Amino acid sequence: MKILFTGLPYFGKRLVAELNEIDPKNKYVFCDTYYSRKDQLRFLWHLLSAKKVVSFNGASSESGSLNWVLRMKRN
Image (cartoon, rainbow, N blue to C red; front, side, top):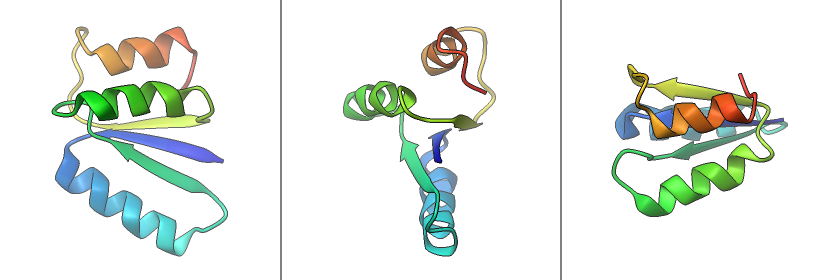
């Protein structure tokens, strides 16, 4: 199962690296949707096949990534 993470880069990158080490049967992917246009596109690409999305931020109603998650009916 693929789980997609977004939000604060420091915590997200560290957690995803550790989860990938201890749980090789699942795939954990982090995308920095705040500062990287490339990662914004990667987020949309991975969202197509992700089963869950975890956000490390206080997303407001104006969050582009959260809007896509809701449109695609991901949790």
